[in-house]
Image (tube, rainbow, N blue to C red; front, side, top):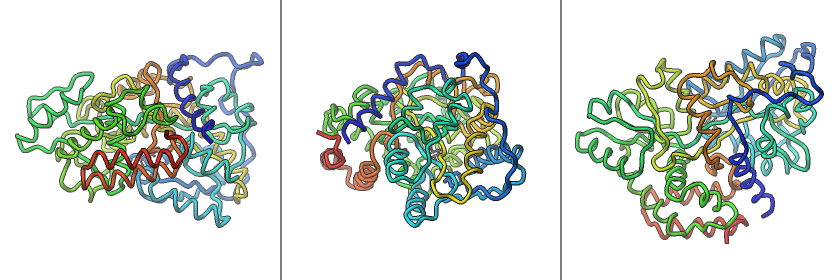
Amino acid sequence: MFGKRFLFVMTVMLLAAQVFTGCAAPAPAPSGGQAAPAGGEAAAPASGGKLEVFSWWTSGGEAAALQALFDAYSAQYPDVEIINATVAGGGGSAARGVLQTRLAGGDVPDTWQVHPGFELIGQYVEPGYVEPVTDLYEAEGWNDVVPEALRTMMTKDGEIYQVTVGVHRGNGFWYNKQLLADNGIEVGDTLSVDEFIAIADQLKAAGVTPLCVGDSGIWATAQLFENTLLGAIGPEAYNGLWDGSTRFDDPGVKQAMETYGKMLEYQNEDHSALSWDQAVKKLMEGGCAFNSMGDWAYGEFVNAGLTDNVEFGWVSHPGTAGSFMIVADGFPIGKGSANPENARNWLKVIGSKEAQEAFNPLKGSICARTDCDRAKFGVYHNWSMDSFANDALVPSVVHGSAAPADFQQALNDAVTVFVVDKNVDAFANALVAAAQSSGFGK
Ligand code: GAL
C-alpha cells in the first residue's frame, strides 16, 4: 500500500517536473504519422437507449458546464436519452456515499464523476467497479495529448480507467473588486498571509466581512485549511505529508493550524448555513470580500454574467503563489452498467478537444489535453494554464487525490473539532494518528 500511495505523490511531482504546458502546447505528432482524429474512432451508430451520468454538479456554474457536455454528446448521439443523476453537495460530500451504496447493491450508473488518484483507484478500480478504457486512449489518439503523468494517475497495472475532462486549480482566492476598491484596497499579483491579515483587519474595522466561507459541507473549510497548509509549508513539504516525510505535528504544520484558526476569525457569521456556491454568491453581492475556493467558483461568476478582472479578481490563496493544487474531474465506464456502449461514447465525446473547449470555460477548469486553443479561453483560464505549466503541482486531499478516503474523512472530522476548540495540538495529533492508521504516516 505504501508504494502505491508514494506513487501518486511522485506522479504529481513528476507532473510538476515535466514540460507541461496546460492547454497551450501544440500536440506532439501522433505516432504512426497520422493526425489525431478529432473524434478518433468513427462515431458508433446511434444505438438509442439511455445514458445515466452520475455527478454532484448541481450549482449554477456546474450545471451549465455539465449541460455543455450533454449538448456535445446529444449532437452525436441524438437518440440516446441522458439521465442526469445528480446528488447535491459540493465536493461530492453526499454523492460519493450514495454512489458507494448503489455500487455495492449492483445498481451501477453507466458513468460517474471521479477524481484521479486515490479516489479512482482505491474506491472504484480496486473493488472492480469500472472497466479499463486503455484501448480508447489508443483509438482516440489521447496518449499523444493527455500528459503521461496525468494518465499515470488514472492507471493501475497498465490499464487506464478514466477520461479526465478538466483540471481545476484548488488554491484560488477570489475577491469582489468593487468592495475592495470602495475600501481603498488593491490586491497585487500575490498575497502573503501577513498582507491578507492586514487587509482583513482593515475591512473588519470598516464593518466589512473579510472572508466568505460556505461550509454547510465541512469539506469547504477543510479546503481552507488545506490551502493554508500548502501556503505555510510550501509544495515540497506538503507533498511530503503523503509519504510520511513531513509529519502532521511538524512546526510548520502547526503554524498553518494557527493561521487557519486566525482566518476563521474573519469569516461570515452564517458560514455554516451556506453552501460553497452560496458563499460565492454572497461575495458577488458585496456581503464579504474574499473566498478561498477551487476555480469551480469561476463557473459561478461567469454563470452570473460577470467578467474576469472586472467585477471579480483572483490571486493564489495567501502564501500559495507558485503552486497549483490539482483537482481533476473525469468519468469511467461502470462495470455491469445497463448501457456500457453509450458510456463508452460519452467518454469519447468528453475526451475530445471540442467538448473540453466547450466545457472548461464554463466550469473554471482547464483542459486535460495539451492541444486546446488558448484563444477560446479568457483571462483567468490563461492565467491558470500558465500556473499549471510553471508551478509546483500538488494533489488535494480534500478532493480525493492525495490520500485514501479514510484519511480524507479523518481530516474532515479533525477540522470539525478544531473549528470549535481551536486546539492546535489536538488537531495535529489527530492527523498524525490518522496518517499512521492510513499507512503513510510515520
Ligand atoms: C470538486 C469537483 C469540482 C467541483 C467541486 C464543488 O470535488 O472536482 O468539479 O464540482 O467539487 O462541487
